[in-house]
Image (tube, rainbow, N blue to C red):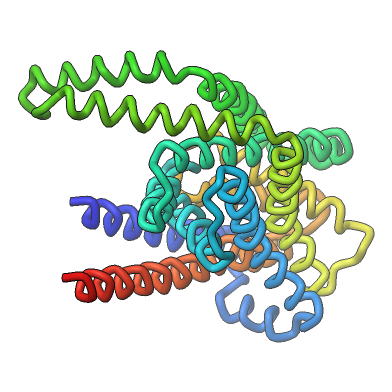
Length: 350
């Protein structure tokens, strides 16, 4: 059932990706896929390589963040394992409606590697807080420094970006509030278990309540350990800043690769920031369609239609689609390695 759901969301994500690209191409009667390939062929190799490195940084920075959080909680894992956790989060978040949709798969890999579920929940909650505040920090600074870009967006784009800021702010307060609500979560969880028991959907209600209590105890302990380490929290925040910047700067690097000038590099960067913020306002896998429209709207402030469409498609192809593809490959490799290890371990001790 779970595999079928994952396949369904993957199919939906691929469909949305295709529709997004076709929708953007339909805005122009002249721009074709052949034109995009030609533009890529004539692009500066130096800036192209930098854009791919920046795209990779989005995965690597999250891997480093999870590595330090796991180490801080007392569950040190090697960099390769952390890279798998980060890739699982990025890939699955990109094919599900929620930005945190990758966390269950990320948690599955951590659990497989021996990390208790309560600690996993605490680690991922702290990561989400750091990621949300890093996004807001960059968003607020860009709003101040790139106000002219924001003001030149279409009115639909402005509404979407404002909604994105509101959603991000609300999530920041929600995540912080949830850190100290273990007792309330337990009470709500027990009520849900009782309701499921009355509906004959769950048996052994006390067993599930005990498991919930144990998980929340681990969660509370994990949060307490991490919250007490302010140096670790600062590292997590700065790594999240690095993660957001590495993805955001891809558009600017792609602009320079295709013959752009330093004069408008800041405008491209600001347009990408507003695109990322605005895409948070709706539960669409990877913000597909919304992020494309917002970036295109921002680029139109100084570029003609054809040039804006070309840069938007090349930028998103690198910062999002290529990133998702690389993450998927890492996840598949990580899954196969763990599966082979698990079965060889079982045969050895059978």
